[in-house]
Length: 174
Image (tube, rainbow, N blue to C red; front, side):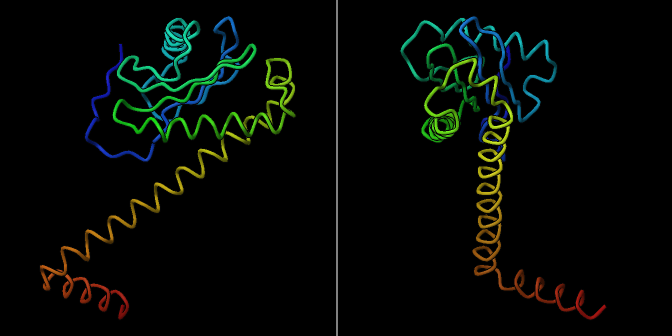
């Protein structure tokens, strides 16, 4: 059983995994974004566990193996977005809804196994676009926070700002 040991560590991976399983719990699509489950064997075991715990419930959220899991089912498909235990459930649900709505539009509201298998390239594109958007937003936020931190501290320590100015000046003169 995996536990999240990085509860206080920031990460660019809001989403740890996106999964789509059929109504037998078999993988139709899986994309893991970090090393929480490094081998296919571990991933399949996790997917079996997640399916057994969620396929008979009407709930939309679960805590499993130290992870936050949001999910939704439609006809013969189960959609999962997985994040760390400290991740905002609303953010994960927004990713899940965005993925489902994108596929629904792409498949002309026929979101079921056969139609999905016939349009896997669209699924790959949708997931990559959503993940890329999230990563871009998180990188921008990280850069903003770093700059804010630098200038906030510099306002209390003028020598930090002066030192940064000197380093920039000397790098430009080289």
